[in-house]
Image (cartoon, rainbow, N blue to C red; front, side, top):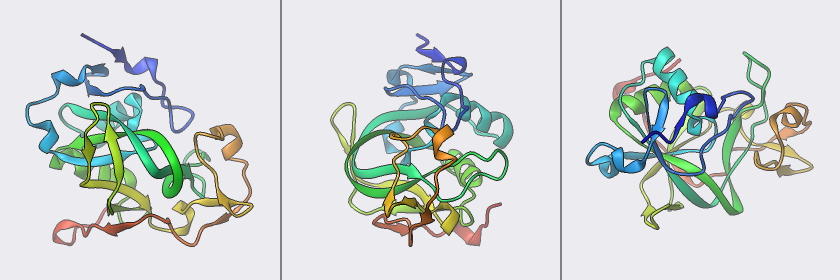
Length: 210
């Protein structure tokens, strides 16, 4: 059974729209989670809090970056972690990207359960080591739709000041509170750092990313 097609969830404006439920993405469409490959829960969990939860963005990664195979995207409740607007704008289109920080409260995001190949594609997409660091979150409070918790969770957080949280009147701005059209016009300063309890994951074999 097809739950949706990419056209139901456009990618523009950033971060695009997303289903409010779990799905498996393949061939430009979403399917129920029970169609996921066997053993998917043993894959690496990666928090998707920005455009990576958008189905059209997933298809873009297939076309442009060689993303392969079914993408398992589990809807998740995140306590104490927030998607906020980053301090700098994207060079290619002037939109303001999201970044992750720690804030009180609960937000709903998504968790990819990735294969090694899919993680390599995400590394390239996120500019690992340049724009964003890949990190392992410290004791995250993330719960999936079925009530289970995931504890070994990776995420991409700002690696440079333009990807640190934007502070307006001293406070980060949640992406859920301010749409892209207004976010691009915000005036503030970068935070001193991402503000997330985590450990940076060293790239394998000294690998670097564009």
